[in-house]
Image 1: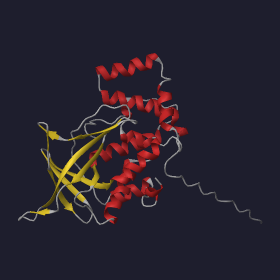
Image 2: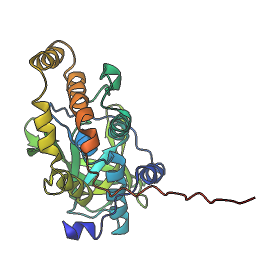
Image 3: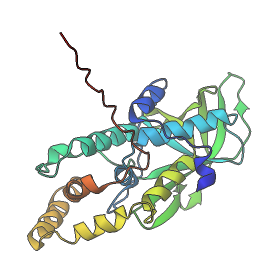
Image 4: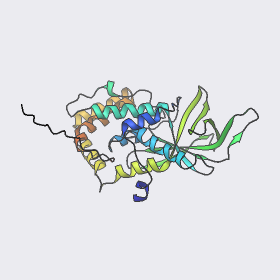
Length: 274
């Protein structure tokens, strides 16, 4: 992990927002998972946002000469980043005495909860019309906080190669063509995501995952029945998010951020004499 730390610098939330504002991918995503803690929520257990991970990973790609054949990268859509911003902002504002309601949840989560990765399988191709693209294979990582698996996207059971079109090669901005139009994405070096998740799971650094699970077990039988009923009769995603925030608010003040927090500057008052 020390080798990662020598090349990866996670920016502050404000610096990440400024960095990401130079490119704004937009679009849709359709993969879907049902997990106890999704990876976006998991980042809040380390006091870090998705934009901070994306900015660190994207900067590494640019600094290392851009995208290359045979390499795997994480990719970030604007819709997933919007969910990431919502989650980070909710984590920042929630308090131990907050009442968790549906207004704290993010709607239309299909495809936004997992880590998305791809592998570039070709050199850059340029058509006679001047359109450039890479052939890539997309992967989708599902993460429940302790178990991880990859599902290679397929059609009729066969792995599919798809085109990743170039929007701005120098800035590392690309897009997929979908049924609803262009889905803009940024690529990130996988070491940024890896480092963030490894640090959050590092119980020697901060046993936040065991604390989360232990706190989850303290919910009353009535609370458990209520969440199960909401998931069964209403929206699973809404019920899952409400359950997450119910546990999170109880342990928020115990979280040790993976990025060291700067001590506030104290200005010493100067006594004046008349």
